[in-house]
Length: 215
Ligand code: GTP
Ligand code: MG
Image (tube, rainbow, N blue to C red; front, side, top):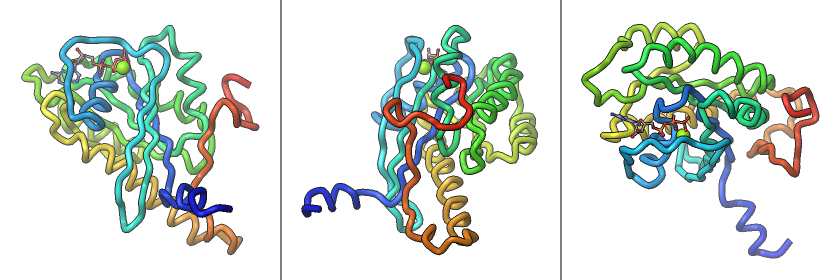
């Protein structure tokens, strides 16, 4: 292998596939836009199907590349978005603290995620209450925390509008996944597992072998 290809391979230690899930208009795309471009858009433009962005960061001395999939919350896109859950390492489940229905629906989103991504190492979840900047809160912090506890997930409130907590949210899901991966490598009986640094990311050209919504 030539030097250029070698250096490309060594660009990162972990490649993590993360999906953003939750009802329409809770602010998934806005959180991603804030994180990637540090920008906020007031106008609502619904996501059609899925979109994704890449971000690299340094964590626990490792280079981590995040592949973040932003899924559409509208019901009509469910068959498409469910397909993207498979093979991911974790999800960020988002609700809007000013809209109780979006909070009530989070449980179903997480169930769907778990059903369509039944690999053990992909069950990392961070729960997010978005629109913290708004004065029209109807879901308390404690309710969010209780729900997160029931998922054994970490919980944060944030605002795509002000930027409050946004970097923290993506760093949290990355940390949760990396910590779990390191632990899995440590307890792995097969010594060759120690040399595994990345997990395969599912793509259309590399479809899932096991049960999935599209297979
Ligand atoms: P879908 O793509 O349909 O699933 O929606 P989404 O979850 O991606 O929501 P999107 O990011 O498009 O935001 C929906 C609306 O909420 C937009 O008008 C945003 O400007 C607004 N919004 C998003 N985040 C915040 C926030 O933190 N605070 C406030 N006040 N408004 C927000
Ligand atoms: Mg969107």
